Image (cartoon, rainbow, N blue to C red; front, top):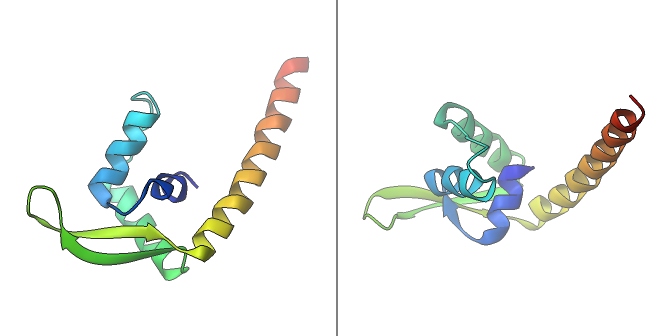
Length: 96
């Protein structure tokens, strides 16, 4: 869900996705390469993102990812599920 949400900011390569997640989360979330790149491959296989090769800002070859229509639909579904789960946890924690 977080990778899909990050890609709503535009076409990004893997390192930029990890950096943006780290930055937006206030330096709380850190996504390691060993987790991110397999996740990107899975998301691409599911058709939720598309990747194309290009050059990064430092002229290195990188795969840039973008969200697909199916990915936007999946993000919406996962966001609703997240809100339900967060609400349920908040209710339980409120009575403990």
